[in-house]
Length: 32
Image (cartoon, rainbow, N blue to C red; front, side):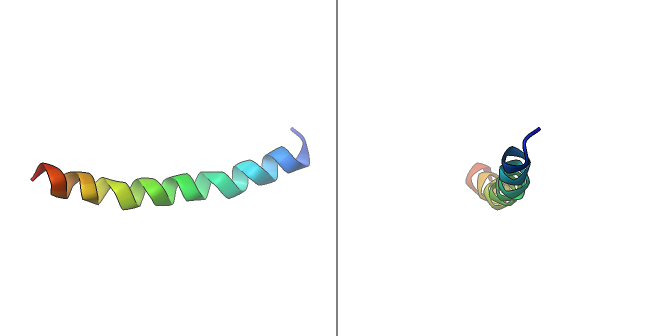
């Protein structure tokens, strides 16, 4: 893969995980 694509993926994946970890507790709070 091209270098820029690898860098963009490496920068985006941690942001997605952070958003998921931030959203999951909110879903549990809304359900409970």
